[in-house]
Amino acid sequence: MTKSAAKNGANLVPRIINHMNKDHVHNIEDFLVIYGHVDPSIAERRPAMEDLELGAMTLSYIDMQGTKCHVRIPIEPTLENFSDSRSKLVEMSQVAARKRGFSEYLINDIPFFNSVKDYVCVTLFFALYYFALKPHVLAYLVNEVFEVSPNVAKYILDYHVTIFRGILIIHSLEAIVILYPLLRKFRMGTLKKFACLLSTLIEGIVFLSAFKETIDRAQNPNRNKEK
Image (cartoon, rainbow, N blue to C red; front, side, top):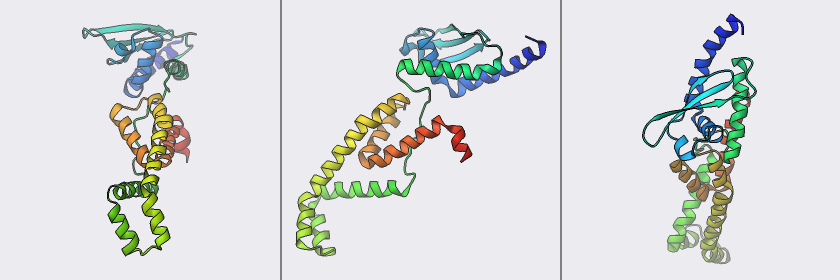
C-alpha cells in the first residue's frame, strides 16, 4: 500500500466506525452472533465496532459481569483498500441477518395517519364499534335521522354487529399472518410492534400498505431521494 493510500485509509476508517456505531448497531450485533459466535442475549449488550483493518474487524460487547469483551472477526477475502469496505460490510450484513432470520435493515418508523384513508378507516371502525355497543343509537339514526326504508333499516340493525365482527376477524388475521412476521423480520421495538398490530386491527390493509411503503423506503433510500 502506498503512503497516499495508507493516509486515505487512515482518514476513512474512523468515519466507517462512527457510521456503523451510529446507524448499524443491529448489524454489528449480527456480526457478533454469526461470525463471532457470541450468544444472542449477550451480543445485544452494547455491541460496537472498535477497529477496522483490511483483513479483520474488532467488535466489542458487554458481558453479564459488566466487562467489555472484544472479538476479532476476519474479513475474507482481505480487502484491497478501505474504499471496498462498504460493499463488503453490506454483503456480510445481509448474510448474517439472513442466517438469523432477520433483514439487514432496521425499521422503527410507524406510518401513523399519513393519508385521508387513515382517518376514514379509524372513523368507520370506531363508529361500528360504538354502534355494536349501543345499537339503540344506530336505530335512532337509521329510523329517525336518516329515515332509511324499513327493509334497509332492518338489514342494517340485524347485521351491523356481524359486519363489525367480520372486519375484526379479517384484520386480526392480517395482523397475525402478514404484519407480525414483517415486524419481527425488520426488528421493530416491542412497544412500536404493539402499536403497529393495533393499527392493523383498526385499519387492516390500509395500514399494511403504508407499512410496506415504509419498508420500501428503508430498502431503497436512494431511489426515494430521486423522486
